[in-house]
Image 1 (cartoon, rainbow, N blue to C red):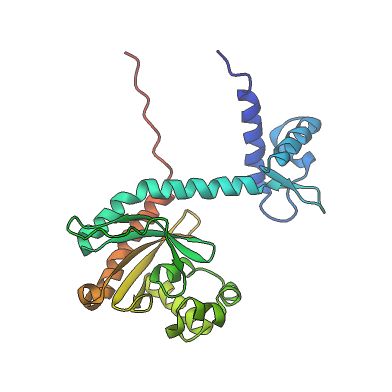
Image 2 (image 1 turned 180 degrees about the vertical axis):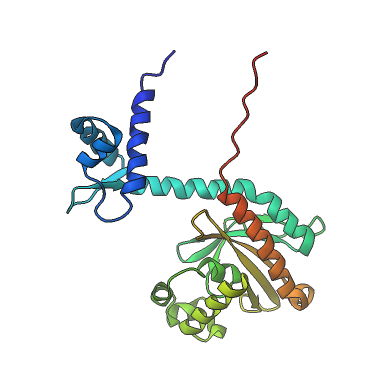
Length: 264
């Protein structure tokens, strides 16, 4: 049976493709131009765009009346990216555990906190309270610093004021400008380390995972007692950065297409 809405869906996707290609800058793309690009009647395109706007899939610039992609698409894309990240990250975390022999975490930025999405531990490790779903403050953690390492300096200054740094327990940083200097060092060497800044007796390292645009979307993190990891913290950071780069490459590649079985 032929789906009656299939052609309509294809036409809507065609409009979204046009807006993704031509509507990213300025005031969007006007209805007439969109109609020319897809080879359809202006009135049809206008009605379709209005319907998509009602659902938040596109939005209309109030000044130019041009259309661009809407907030709902970006929200769906963010959720899809995070879901895919969790789905493919497991083997990379396990490889890092096998090399460092410490518990490894996959972390993302949620609001002003670091959220752990996934953890992997060595088989011999004591399993206490898990970190999945638990949020911690950004500035005093290596994962947090990695996750904001590609922020613009003004954004860092606006968000991480001296008062917020103090509240987060990041006094050892020495202030917002010191945080900016630390972020610059992270970008140069590719990983971050902390030494008893988040918790007494605990050290950690983290490295960035990036999406296809090159933006930091997650961090691979290791935290362990200083007595076990302290003297090899930089080595652990370099190994973490290498595996994070490999996860970045995997995340940036298109999903594998399922092979179609031949008829029997």
